[in-house]
Image 1 (cartoon, one colour):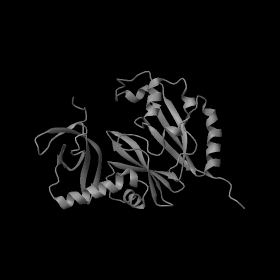
Image 2 (cartoon, rainbow, N blue to C red):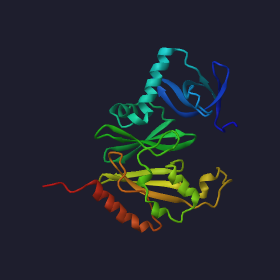
Image 3 (tube, helix red, strand yellow):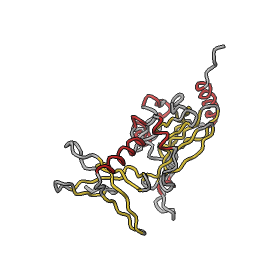
Image 4 (cartoon, rainbow, N blue to C red):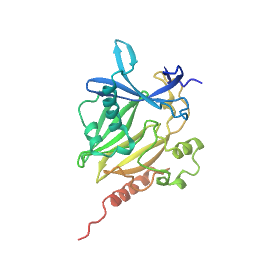
Amino acid sequence: MTHPDAITLTMANGDNWQFKVAFTFTFEGAEYALLTRITDSSDGEVESVIMQIQREGSLTRLVAIDDIIRLRRVSQHAEQIYNADDADSAISYQNLNSDQYDRAIFDKIDLGEGMTVVLQSMHGWWKQRVLLNHNTQRAYLLMDEDYTMKFATADDIDWSSLSGLPDKAITTAKRLSMIYPTHIRGFNNGVATIEWQLNPDGRYYADSDGYGMTDDQEITLYGYIDRNGRLVGKFRYYPDIKALAEARRQAEAAANPPQPK
């Protein structure tokens, strides 16, 4: 079966394997793409490959990097930026806060209080992927290339508040999937509101002419994140948004405990 976003590459042994573009980036004035393997990779063979992007007018090509030294340097650069285990290191902050990124691929939103969120264009959608703290020069990964949440676990969800929601929405929560719109709002008193959609409004599925729109109702969980990339409390579903004001007050109190005199 061919994946809709698949790119087929012929390997040295003659096998044809399917890859998908995980992310694109620029390095030393050139544009690159990291491709991850879709075809079953349990054989221990290549799971990812980096290729250079060449654009000629409306034509875009992926070209193999033949220079081993350049390939190594480009690979190290990509790993520094997107390795989840290194996502909160100072070097990742320096990379993401540099001026070398292509604005067609990356964007940033100022959240106040010295905080910024970095967005990446992923399969045509802008996703908030990394939180930057300019005060501490740290970066915190919000989601990986498969849209999986990286700053929280299933234990960080108030499952009782999801009782009665559609199975589709609960499945999205169990998968910690951020594939639908998720937004971090501005920081105030050390915390920011996170709106995590488990199911989008039916207009999400419509094209520019409105075709494809469904009768889906938006289902959003709310949570709060501090300036260290940590969730304050649990994600909850609030059928009455009036309760959000009290939830916000509690989050701010938890993020700013009284200091001993």
